[in-house]
Length: 394
Image 1 (cartoon, rainbow, N blue to C red):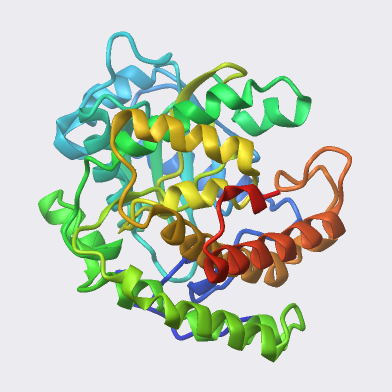
Image 2: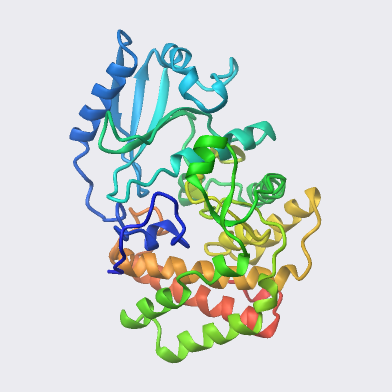
């Protein structure tokens, strides 16, 4: 496992949280944790915060790195009474999801991470643009009432799109175009700086301020360590790692980004809720950064081939033109994202899972995921080195 010292509450030393955090791969283990104690602590904290309000808490059994819960009861009353605790004093919209339920996410790692405060600001800015994201109704990163941070969100009564994809009912082409349009729209958010946002600035000033002065500094952060980890675990050879570093060095000029845009940074079907033919909400903005316009589009290519990416690019282009050198930037970011995903998948043992795991398609297994990971990494490197079009993307 990758070892680190405990960071400060801001993610200055983090390229990607799941593999760079001090407790690397925390929450990614296959075992279903006993969340009964956390549920009890949450119930006690909420009863103190909302005295006299009848509430019930049940584990939601999410497969991400957060422990999740469903809250049922008089949620509208809670939010109304707690409105001064929510960024901007926001309240549930009259036409929004049912206010008899809410969704609670927790962060229980030893780092005392407070990126939920960032996510609150991100979602408020996206809602102001008319984008479909869950409203944050309450958030507590102080760890005084509970030993973990928690975030209460509006409950969206839809499964994630990966559920429809695995069942074979997802209208993927149309959905891909809608995703591309949404990416282009959320790039109207143009934060200062690059990389992860300052949680302190988000909490105190409700602004999004990247922690790095240049995009180059963010993109290359922990890159050599990630490659060294993959070599040590025999996922890559030293020759392959050197070839990756050489390719990135040859395309260093592409990292001269003057203005960052909002990047989801974990864009995948399981982070989008909706029906087979419609998106209801984009969720899980806890990895959001200020970065390159092609980054989120490249993240889709970590899982999907040329037909899907072409439709996403078409949707994007209906809202805004593709940036200069779009394809080389696409390959450069697919390469970086696949390095990170390889680190997580190797470190957390994803290649030993079956198709009950959200990352593995129906009828496949962990070995297939390993093969796909290697192929995507090789394709990204080839695309960057040879200036390929999307046709090489399987």
